[in-house]
Amino acid sequence: MKMKIKLSYQWAVTALLLAAAGCSSDDITTEKTAKPAAEGNETAQTGFVAGTEGTRTSLDYDTRDFFWEEGDRIYVQDDGNVFQHSSNAVTGTRQAAFKFLMPGTYAHNSYFVYYPGKNGTGNNVTIASAQTQNGPDNTLHFGISGDCGTGTATRQPNGQYKFQLNHAAAYLCFKPTYSHPLASTYVTKIEVTANKNIAGAYTLGTDGRLTGTGSSQTITLTPKTAGSSDGFAMQNNAAGTSCEAGRMFMVIMPGKYKLTIKYYVRDKETGVSGVITKTFGEFQYDANGYYDMPAALSIRYYDDKYYTWDAKKEYWFGHKNDQPKKTGVPGSNYPTSADGDRWYNTSKDPNATANTAKTCPNANELMWYCLKGDPHWDNKTLWTVWGHLYTGGMWFKKASVIASENGKSSADKLKEKAPSGTDHVHNQPFITPPDNKNITQKAPDNRSNYFFLPAMGRYEEGKLIEFGSYGRYWTSTPYKWGKDVSYSLYFNSRDVVVSNIIEKKNGLRLWKTE
Image 1 (tube, rainbow, N blue to C red):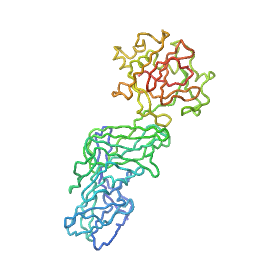
Image 2: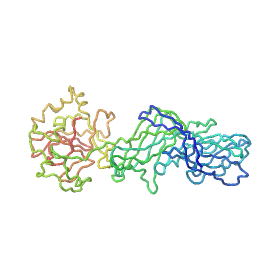
Image 3: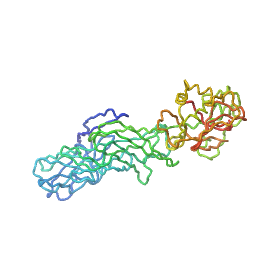
């Protein structure tokens, strides 16, 4: 038997600022058939049948079909004005139809039906401030999280009553994505905070709406998978170019809110965890509305290229499979003097930089960054390389900001002389370069005036060292007083140094004036 079901729903896809949402209503034809289930003594009770028409209490996101689920009950006020709950509850999962058996007396042509969720009674509903989803794309937690609804049951010729449930809560859908692959990262929690209460105790009215003030502005959704406490994995696509987690759903009180959403992530292999925060402007979240929340995770991505000073090719060019990705692990086939492309530029002429280091800041600019760049050590900002999460890095003021604050007409003026007035590119006096131990231990408040460098360490004779704790970056200026040495930036959580002792054969990172 083919049945036609009319689904009443809103499906809204929100833009980043949540400026608009769309509503629709479709007729969906399904081949599914279901015979209303019966339990108990039907002769002493009245059947209230939730047929295949309309919404129920769990969702197939892709088909937009709804189902009754294990343990669902309804409530009706009988002719004695007493709230009765069905003597039977739904058994099994994904029930498209179900006959609820109601004790009490029912002589009128219609009655108002309440579904207060699994934690509610009568017309009293609790939208949970702590919700748990077992498995990606799973909505079986709706009923216990605060899903609720009402409907008008109408007497049928056989004496039973038939109704369609209209949902009274609103629903948020999250599908975190990242534009690069990740190897062992999990979403462990999603936390939504509004500027008004979105959870707590509410009342279902005869108009089908929830009323009440609630008690919590924050709802936490915890994703779980069977046999694991890791959360939902960020799964790579087939091409290995990006990743995403399975959909996660949250029940909230309908209303107009400003939302802050925090995604908690953890890399199981590195042990690094962090929080990615997104904020959304005021928007109306309607009852029975399902809202796809933009969930592209903003995590800084870095490649794994290191270079000997001003080499033509990267340190591991042609030997990427030999590149160690953990500290202390020796690597083979690292650059030697026999490798013309990967070996460093031996010249000490400050004008001889011709290859990969020529776009790096020069020694004068480096001293401005060191002494006037207001360095901030940040051990919370997440970044990735090799498909893993890491933290640790330094923020510096941008060259344009430094120039403006120090009376320079443009950032290019920083190239000409250091803060002392000396040209360390061409003159290079034999002095100990400056270092700055005045390091702020947090990210700057106004990040738009700063740029970030990750602490990615260096390669020394093929071995990765200092990764996660120290930053090492070349300049375009060779140091004339040392044997095969170049100026470089060196930093850790306590110090920023203009270094003139690192040999050119080391594998350091490149950077550009910002």
